[in-house]
Image 1: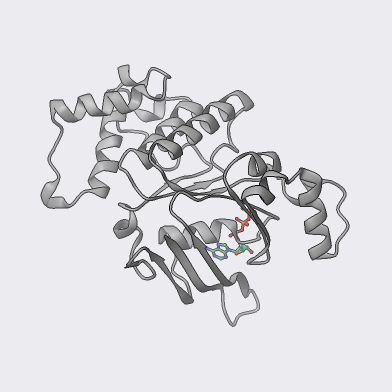
Image 2 (image 1 turned 60 degrees about the vertical axis):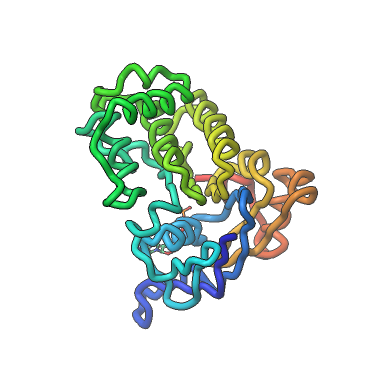
Length: 265
Ligand SMILES: Nc1ncnc2c1ncn2[C@@H]1O[C@H](COP(=O)(O)OP(=O)(O)OP(=O)(O)O)[C@@H](O)[C@H]1O
């Protein structure tokens, strides 16, 4: 169980540029929950993921994963429980290192140093097996530098690297937004497979409302650092894009020309 309790985050506090990015956020996620997060630009979606990953620390409140208090733990310390994939396929992998070396880095991040051994034949076989599940031939390219892969291949590898080390939480930050539609499909179906295979508790930020409706069992709509609308299970299953637009309009009190003006980039 992942709990966020009364989380606050303000940037440039007490200056003319003060920006409240997350305001009094309390939520509980059960193991295996898959939450999709939508919201206007600057709503606080990435800040929420940054707080969970430990990239930034909250001003107040606490975050727990089961009995573990994550609130003040560094990003490195949390890495064994939390995998993350970013929007930019260039982020999250090292371009000048090979696929194999990148996978070793992921493993090193999540294993106790005393247990960590260098490359072995067994490990290489395991890497190959994991890569083969992507079904894009990367298992035959262990020694290829990651910088030579296409955006889609690289994002598939990022997704694998974020999950094969068996974390409990997966954070997806618009991870298909930079890809063309056919590659988006590939990454989304891999996402579904890997989340199910590893029973991951997942938070996926997206600007595409259809995606937010199609994926997961819970949906959060954020605005100005708060979750202003949420739906889960049967209620979420029934949601349509017009429902989401209407909900935003009702809560925000602003008339919206179309969904792209609100939730898409
Ligand atoms: N590191 C930072 N330093 C200063 N301000 C920040 C920082 N990160 C986020 N902010 C500000 O906090 C607010 C929330 O930003 P955040 O990136 O979380 O929004 P978002 O919902 O992810 O938006 P988008 O959809 O545009 O990516 C914004 O006003 C943003 O400018």
